[in-house]
Image (cartoon, rainbow, N blue to C red; front, side):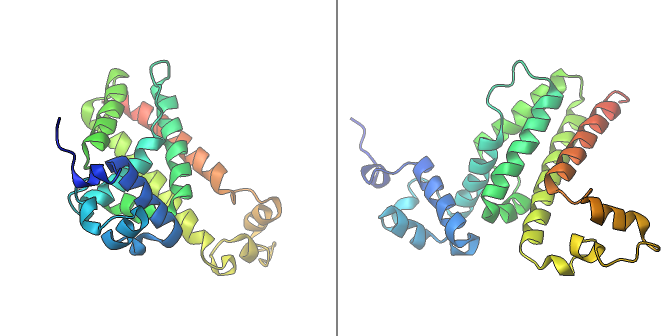
Length: 218
């Protein structure tokens, strides 16, 4: 019988460690994530965690994998490439809004774990099968992902500041002179162009239409 590691004897696995780390970030923010605090949450010495993640960078990469992996549709065989990308974008936005502490990692850390790379490979295969050259397929995936992360970062930032201070905010638009800014005051009156979800869907649809059109010209 193979000898179990200390981490296994403690009832831990990589998945358990990553979920506990994600819970810690959700509750206290990314700056609060240390191996010592994570060990305390899991009821083990910090060194025990290294049996499952070799270092802090691997832990952070694992958190990105956990959030992005859950955002990837699991059944894609009967779907079009457009619906796959639309579903991925909507799911990733929802996951990042649910776990805002991971957004800085999503901005700065590329796909690095084997599971993340398999996810990227799967997306490339779908686009390549639809006629995208490999380079354009990678461009499309990267552009869509960067857009989603940036949009969520903007939403989170807006949620944490006084909306009165935002250029173009509803509060600011309501005070404008309609004779000088007729279109902006109409937007304030109708609330058109101020909904984050509607803006997100519009932009994703536009990106996907553009991906398809440009891929056909290559």
